[in-house]
Image (cartoon, rainbow, N blue to C red; front, side, top):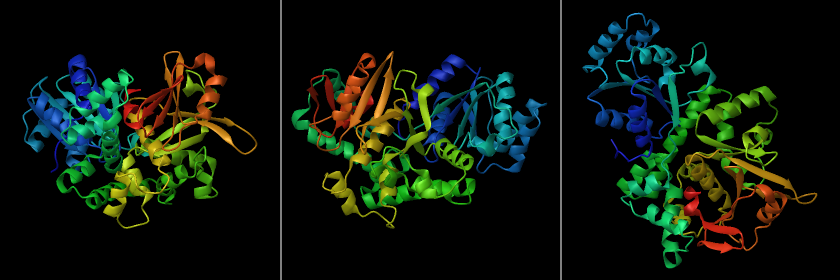
Length: 443
């Protein structure tokens, strides 16, 4: 059993418990191994007098069959208490449905259990929207849904015993001050997070062993679980192929993910289904092309033009070196010290996608022709109020930010602030704020 890490979603659960007081259930979605079960069990232990934790990955048929007939709820609750050897107390206990996608009837039962009102209900699930997990059941409207992402940068710093760094960085950001001498150390701290990532198991392995090869093995184990899941969803292997190709597609500096170049001939309906499953697995983040940059970008997104990122950059780095059985410590050390010669731009782009998504932003980008063979590109567009914040990411030479300048000319009426995210210290360049990558979460 590894360490239990402090997660920000805990306070969201507290708010749900206080405000809803049993009127809704809460469903925590997220990729496998992101820490859902640990979080909800810790919450149940701390905030209730007793709880029943039903893991539908291993629950008996006897437990699952209880949810097929809801006429006699007293019987259901008595059976659960006897099987799990727990006494439930009215309005002081919670029942957890862990990996609820493996028992669709239990998820459907939430409507009636919430209405009954005796206990609170928390569900967790991965692959929760996948068609086969929702077929033939009525989804409960009495269900709030939240997403648990991999640990963000602040949660990672907490895990390694540092509560001070991120609030300090926020102060520098708000005052628009460079860090000067401290910047190098902060970049090194940040690259450590990029390499390990935010999967609790990988962070725990780092804390226990301080050995990057061991961390890499832990990450490979997690990726293997994802690949096995994809294999079950799509025995042709196309889904896992799409996932494994994310790093190479991003490294090609193309302005979109090209599924046909990976899969060859595939029917459009089948491709859409595969991509939907990939997105629903929460192991990836999709950034869609906005055809008409404006505040309602969801309305003008082009679902045929997208980029795919890994939801966790630590896993992304392991996936980039997947052709080896293990990524040696030496590669990690070079990456950590910024000495590896590979173009790291695409790794930083993945990292920024991850940070923006975990701060609650939907991901959009924009490209338009420069000449017959080249495009301008804005890596990320954030909508803020009635305005846009365009973001360009540069991991190296950034004396020019032509795409950003041209975009701001083209759409001057709707631009509020503009950012260039860089690996150097904070500085202002006329209207553009050059922001060190570790300040991205404050946007």
